[in-house]
Each structure stands twice: as C-alpha cells, then as structure tokens.
Image (tube, rainbow, N blue to C red; front, side):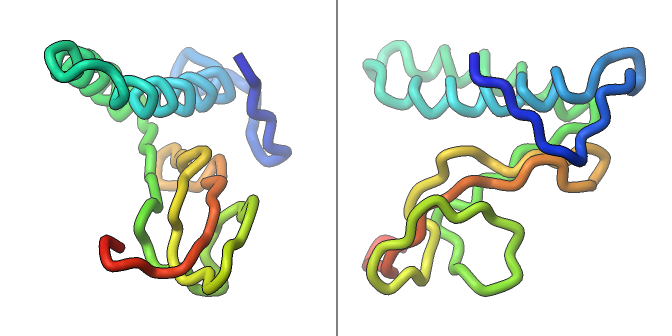
Length: 120
C-alpha cells in the first residue's frame, strides 16, 4: 500500500488513533470502490454496501472524502493537478480524492484536467 505523507499531517494520536493511518485508510477505501465499479453487476451492489459501511465508519471518525470529478476548474482550487489536457476546464479524472478531517483539508485531491464534454 502506498503511504501518503503530506507535511502538514500530524502523526500524534487523535481520538485514540493515528490520523495519518486513518487518512491512508480513507484513500485506499476510495480506490477500492473505484476498482469495484468494474466488477460484474451481480456482485457490485454487495461491494457498494460494504464500502458504504466503511465510509460511514470513517465519517464517524471525522473524515470526509471529496471527489471533484466533473467539477469545473478555477484557479485557487485546492487541487494537485497531475496533468492537463487541451482546454482544461473540468476535472476529467480523480487519481486521489481530497480528504478532510473535522472540516480541515488534510490531503489535496490529485486530478487530471481536460476539456468540458457533453457529459460534464
């Protein structure tokens, strides 16, 4: 598992757990759900149910995942832009979601920007 180590993250215990470990868990759960969208329809719903339970448990710890996919880009957004394709008006791919703890940004979303399409 790749570890996220932003410089602003405290590794001190928070509410009895290490914040950095929870942040990593939240991102990996999001990635797991993205990959599960590719599995057969008959099993996808069950996986979604499990993910929603994990997501609820993380939310109870004060964590929130925000996926900016499809959002219009404007300067000043807290995004780590990994690539930019012609036009660059909208987030066309999220590599990693933003993670907030108690309403404060802990990990910036990593995204790829591209031109607005009919679907976005």
